[in-house]
Image (cartoon, rainbow, N blue to C red; front, side, top):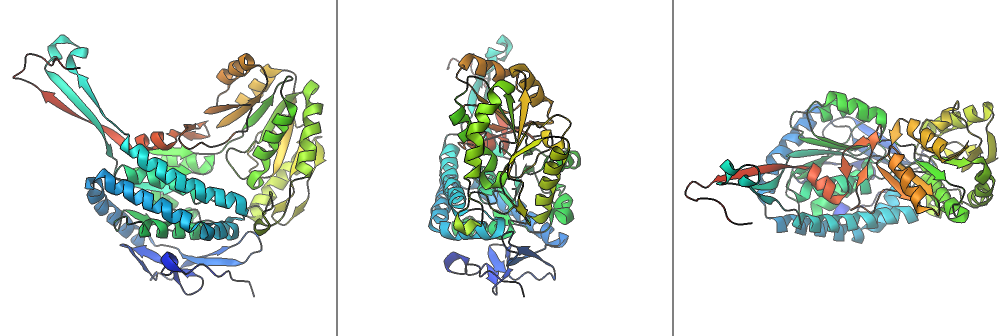
Length: 503
């Protein structure tokens, strides 16, 4: 008989569950037992324990959710800015107060170690507060007609930003709290309603997160959650006529599909990556190794911004690897409750895919330096040298704890190989020569370039951009708010005036 995890049921979470394992459905601000007969069993990737049973919502129930979100949005948009700010601040306080619960859930449900899980909860609270303040700083502008032509001197336009309506927020399994908050908060602060579709493996965390927003005082219908397998309800959600904007983080494959089926609905997408670390001969090799190892293996490499390949010259490779290999050998491997650095991957299938990439590279002549040990979905951190362009590991996103080393003859070849990737999220350059760093950075076809640091998302008010198969649009607090609003203009035709003299 499988072990069942006892979900938190105290305080604000008392109403979330129906019994020990079955989670409820939020209907019009109240947690109710889902009257459908289908649920999804969420099992822990750590040991297969049953975390919870979440509702697999029917299309009729989804229609109800979107209709309620559509109706509630109008009143929320008319609410004063200070009410929206206050709700976000209360949500941030509650998130900090219940951080221990979120840490436990993230450990059980997605095998995230306690240190990283706590950072995710803390970062999410910070994001809520910063978004609340950024909402206060969103301004329109006044435009003079005669700046364009003398005949328009009696025209003055005022522009301001208005909400889009109902935002569908779809975060990924690896950050089911933080990347949900990064979509929810910008949507809510500017007067949208938000429907959260958490990842299947992450649904329990998404439901508990929704309980925090509900307790923070958001009106019924303004913040809702729908659960179900994306393969079953994904198209129905993303093509729903009451959805006015979609913000999605996930695989490039799904991102391409969303772009095709959603028509003219505005979208903000963060997709896959194959982030390259370009290490020049004059780099501080100790610093480069420290950043690369941390960037490649944190949360078992299951991050879009993980360092997924190293491009280094033959002359510098030996010294870089002299620093990398001992650091990788010292990484702790085990379970999240023990705060191991490398923990089980999200599923057996994910681990098998990574193993395929390793096997393909080794069969084609790559050299194993450390790792290539596996127990079910737990993979030990692996470094593979002399990876070449004919190997799948050079191009496919491994999304696991494997670091390929690709040797190049010079910086020009490194740039060429980096740009040949279908992905364009981030790159990192390690060098002491700032002129060389800037020159290479301008050539790289990515959204962001890190100089002497690992690729990373954040700080969260920085722009976060993916190009090519890595995404569409800019995220970051202010940029996300702008993406979830539209500009509206009111034009004054001042017939009684001879011209507008103000600045």
